[in-house]
Image (cartoon, rainbow, N blue to C red; front, side, top):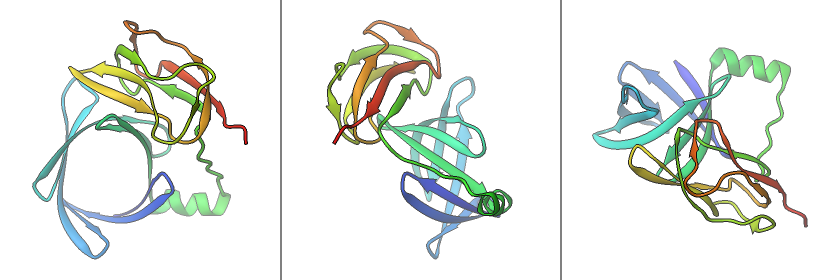
Length: 169
């Protein structure tokens, strides 16, 4: 089965067949196993293992946390891609919006203050989950409008941590 995967501004065509994925002319062995009772997954690609946290959104969208970086991804199968092409959907990428907890955890540190200008990749909050510290970062340029949490707060998955405003030019 074919999937069109978007990660940020990048697009990839993947063909899945059993325990293999074909990408860019190469075939890779792949295994994805969920860690029971957690939002964590073990991803094995050609013998290399990666531990990541993932939360499914709607319509094939995923919020993935890997090495402290939050990654927004979307995977569309052939049917969904065809429907989107017929109907059309605008997708925008900016730093403005809400930074939400990708999993339940403990707020360890706040790295940004209200009014601070931030760029893509700038750290905003450090969240401890599953005995790992994860630095949540801005996905694009913006201004910190409001910091909703404080160090020591316990948050649930989806809780708003920071609100970002569009960056003024």
